[in-house]
Image (cartoon, rainbow, N blue to C red; front, side, top):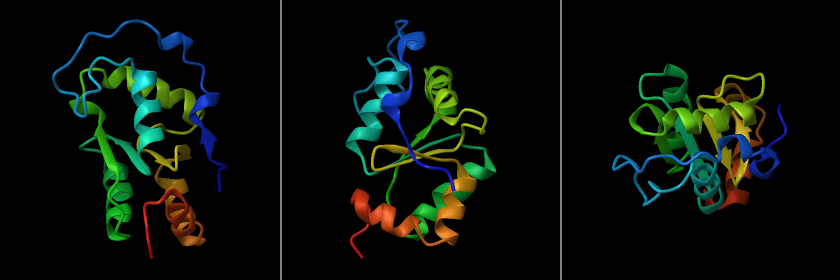
Length: 137
């Protein structure tokens, strides 16, 4: 299992170019740069999933979390005007892994669907979710 990585370990400087405002972003985040948006979302929510609507792995990750009773914040990158910029931030975090879906729990990058499933199978996912405040079981 991969150790969770903090978003603060990502270098935001390559992505500090201004982004045009977009009306498609929800939560009033349309004026933020991609790094700022990702940082804000993951630090203010227990569970965040960056996804692509037609990606089967993204669907598996979301369904697993929903089946456990977690209501994650889901950001569909293909529906965001700055989805490419957000994906660049996720690429920095994921390293050699495929960046989508990208699951954050308790403000830290957990990984993709493989790490999420491995955590669930080995019994570490539910304690992580409880610690993050996403489950009260």
